[in-house]
Image (cartoon, rainbow, N blue to C red; front, side, top):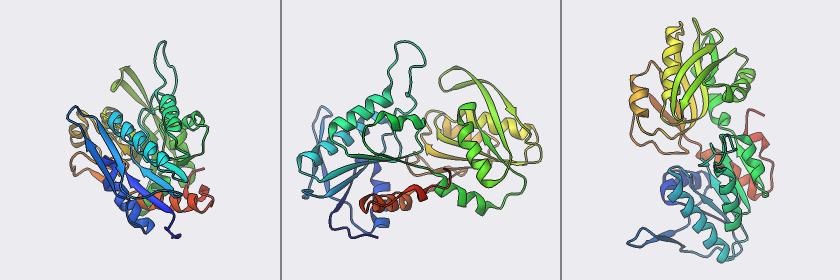
Length: 313
């Protein structure tokens, strides 16, 4: 890769597992950070090496978002006050992304607030992956590099060599993403239409399209409680599907998610390491995004186009 003399890559606490792989793929070492903790829960990051005049990349996914987000903001502020040349926030998973609009009165638009906080802290650029809503890019007045996990998933799907393949969207909102996979791979698409009575709970679901005799791959950006995925997999198998797999970028996997996956008719769930798994599961396989992020960091530093880093345009 490029000369690393003027690049510093630092990691937040909970993304260290991924940051180490990104730094190794890039060909450098992670910068040294210490975190001073106070008895009341307050913490203060310290960059233990000079960043004056350097292009600083800070890696931190904002899952379980409050603490991780605050840590990221403090690290950005520390780099800015230490005279870094430029600061890029590398946020593989952008928390609060489901709060992208006012869908009812008197609610916050959390993803816009986070954009304001990052900009105010002093970040010059954001590098992220598979935002829950693409319009979040417009909440920033700084460059946002929005990467697609298709760079990892498309070759992987091809390596499975599945006959009678069908791409599925778990809901109407994800149909655009699924349609891109369907079009690129040259296979049909089906959509699950679901009705929710409240958040994280699916009351009713139907399939739009034919899955009989098909190997189905469900495509989505996040999996939280796994209620939708488990229900969709069971429904498709009951409607004659040969197998049901899923490729989902961000494995939040909260609450009953692991039990639901293990007890469902899902053959396999493939996720990335934007968020670490809470525990191992035989039905879950993790694909790393470290090489992709290392490549994009290199291209950003060298002012090269990153549009070639995605299969799906």
